[in-house]
Amino acid sequence: MRNISKRYDDNEVMRNINLDIADGEFVVFVGPSGCGKSTLMRMIAGLEDISSGDLSIDAMRMNDVPPAKRGIAMVFQSYALYPHMTLYDNMAFGLKLAGAKKPEIDQAVRNAAKILHIDHLLERKPKQLSGGQRQRVAIGRAITRKPKVFLFDEPLSNLDAALRVQMRLELIKLHKQLNATMIYVTHDQTEAMTMADRIVVLNHGAVEQIGSPLELYRNPRNRFVAGFIGSPKMNFIDVQVSAADGAGVTIALPGGAALSVPRASDGVRAGDTLTLGVRPEHLMENGADGCDARFAGEVIVVEHLGGETLSHVGLAGGGTIQVKGSGESAAADGQRIEVGFSVRHAHLFRQDGLALGALREAAQASAAPAEN
Picture 1: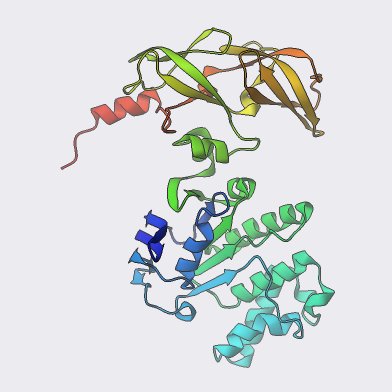
Picture 2 (picture 1 turned 120 degrees about the vertical axis):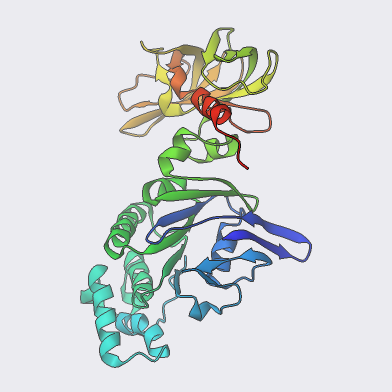
């Protein structure tokens, strides 16, 4: 994708999208409702016109190529199965329309059904199947076409929680088995983290960051990405800068304690306000040994989730944070506790939302030769 934009009259809903997806890669578009992820997928499929920019598949420009000739197959949130047809006929229908011969159709349908473990259900009709089985049929219909690119538009949204986990694993295995290029749209960042080779985070029609799941988790480019990737989301606390130099940025924590964070100062000055970000799973109850900084607060609510505990803690200086501990946590409502964290898990964000980079990144950038 090169400078892809989409406009409805004077309303620009997608802006300047640039993205390369490698052959065989599993890429997930993720973001909140209305961010443009489904619109972008529909432009790839040819179901939406591209207002400006170029889309190429296999080095061929696709802007004016009709959907049926793009070499793509799309799986929607709704299964879109023909209720009066058997599973076999549903999966064979696209090939019949394309004029494929009977032996070719039969082999393609049975191979896809075997891959998806529904080969024993081929004579049933959709009403006789569970939601997960119907979604497998929809995926099988896509497999029979042997597309260059699979497009999945929130295909698991209609399934219950347990079945979503099962189908997520099935899709991961399917990707490895087919070694196919797959683009997957979801608003569920857990799906994105577990399935993707790379994640594209979208917001208000623009790309916020592209990277591997761990790259986005560990080094979010801005506060939006930091808050969207990870569950529960990152804690954010406004802090004052005490000092900033080549060794890092020193901030004043709630309660007055100072903390030196090894982040590039890059124009930050004493007196500036930054946002400190720390993930709930990186906060340790009772300020355990190895913590570089500590907060004191009162437990407001405790959520016992079995294997883990989520405590909502009101800080002495105002504001609330979430602390993710083990299922053995003794935290209780109304209890005064101290929580701590290591400085290596601290993130700092400017008022415009951009993250301060690591010191080594800043040093490398200044040492790199200028480009012509």
